[in-house]
Length: 157
Image 1 (spheres, helix red, strand yellow):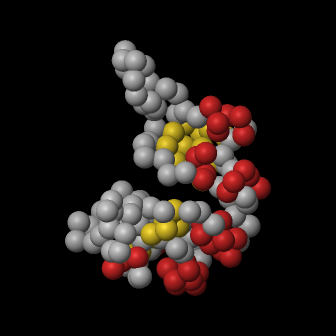
Image 2: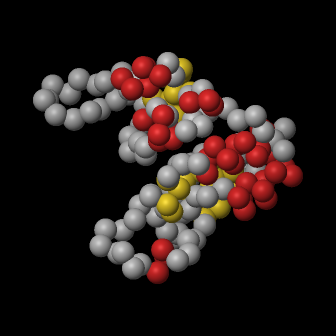
Image 3: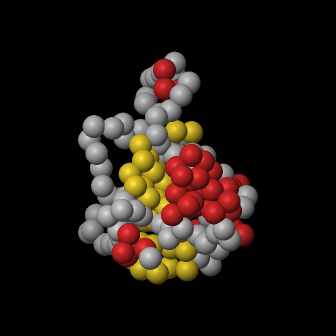
């Protein structure tokens, strides 16, 4: 969070360390931050919360100019475990499904929905199984897409 504050990101909620009374651990309240799009352009200069996976209750978001820009920003990451898209333009859904580089894609739905019958792994630098250098999934990757548009149609119009 110190890095995020140095970059001047907007903190919508959270961002406070929880005192556990112990000398170890980095526990934070659930946190949502918005990072300016221009800070996301070059991963080597981007805030930590944009360039690294956060395994905790911390999420970073940014604004895109259009669909093409949103896909470019998302795919520029070294990681590809999950992607979440909210759109009211039903024509763009197939484009997102086909062009986003993520193993799990949620469209117009909360990302907490998990289907235990599908792989929970990722692509790129996300979730490589330890010791599986020649794992067959290095050659291809599966993509799980949950499209909640029909269930949420009234909410997104």
